[in-house]
Structure formats: C-alpha cells, structure tokens
Image 1: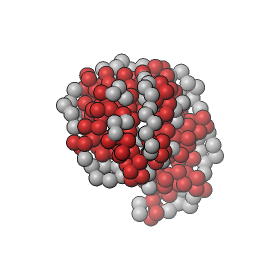
Image 2: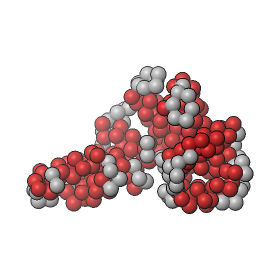
Image 3: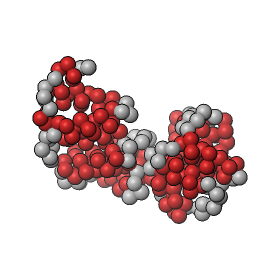
Image 4: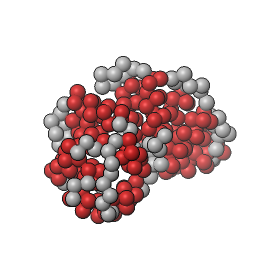
Length: 260
C-alpha cells in the first residue's frame, strides 16, 4: 500500500491531542513529502521525549528503513509505547505487524481488530485497508462493495492515494452501484497518481492508451506509464511495450522499442 501522511493532524483531531513538541510539524511535513531523512532528524527528539505521534512515525521509518538504517527493535519499542498512549496511527501499525507476524507474534484476529479500531478513529490508511478487505471478502469479512466504497470515500476525503485509486477502479468497473464512467475513473486515477500511487499512474496511462472516455493519446499514455515504471510498477512496463507494439494513440509502431 501506497501512504497519505498529510492526514496526521486530522487523525489528532479525531482522536487524542498532539503534543506540541518542536520539530513535530516539520517532521510530519517532511514525512508527507517523502523526505524521510529530514523527518527522522525532526522527529527523533520529540519521540525520545515521549510524543506519541512522533514515536509512531519514527517507529515506522525505523521498521521500514525509510530515511536511514533499519532498527526493528527500536521501531517496535516506539510503536508499542505510542500505542500504549492510545495513538491511532500506532494502532494501525501494530495491527499490520500482528497480521504479518512482523516484529510481534502473528495474530490475525488481533491485527484485524486493531486496524478496524484505527479506521473507526479516522486513520485513513486503516480505512483503506478495511475497504480492501470488504471489496475482496478478505480477513473474515463478507464481500460488500457498497460498504467498501464508504470506507474508501472516508479515506479519500483525507487525500489517501490508495483509496482514490480504488474509487477509480470501482468507477471504471461500475461497482458498488456507481455508474460506469471511464472519464471520472481517469480523474480519480490521475489524482491518486499525482499523490504517488503507482497502480493509478499505470491505470491512467492504460486509459489514455486505449482511448476510453478520452481520445487515444499514446504520448500522454507513455508520460503516465513512465512515471509508474520509474517506481518499478511491473504492469507499467507491460503497457509501455503494448503502446509501442500496437502503435497506440498515434505513437509509431516499434516492436524493437516494445521489447527493449
């Protein structure tokens, strides 16, 4: 899952007050914009001083190796402490950790419960994950596309890119009672893609390549697809090859380029 870190302050408002430690807003801004090394610098001291939100975000960076070396032991320590302080983001992180048996004992029931709790408290990434479970009938949930859409809309309202991508998919496929509309789907894919959601970048390129809802435009398709390929989205490479192989949207056919 691609992440929407700008919702931090919304999560605070919906749950527990954020401590006003110096460096926390700057750290969240850096995290939101993918400047993880800077985010680590700004959030380290507040986390050491017990700021629950800083501990959650620094813990995630340490767990994933974003912005520096991994430190799984310290990551677990920060996330558990943040969760003990009833931080919503930490609840989501701990839930996914239990689901995957990552740094803690595998316990899918507990993990799903923690994720759902975080979703109820307004954590957008958790809302998207619950929506995915409902859309696919996974994690013990009966498939319910209409309810999944409700969760996706809640997360998208907080600029969660993955949720926007799912709404685009539902709109393109005409799911959950949505009228099928390729142009509206394209708009959702572009919004999600511009927030860094790789699958949506590819989906936007595919729609331009095929000319669904818009005139086929191979050059525009390649622009979106190359952005997805730059972050190693496998399907993007396939569609780039497809554009050249079939000469889509005015791009000259070039089998050599297609399989370069």
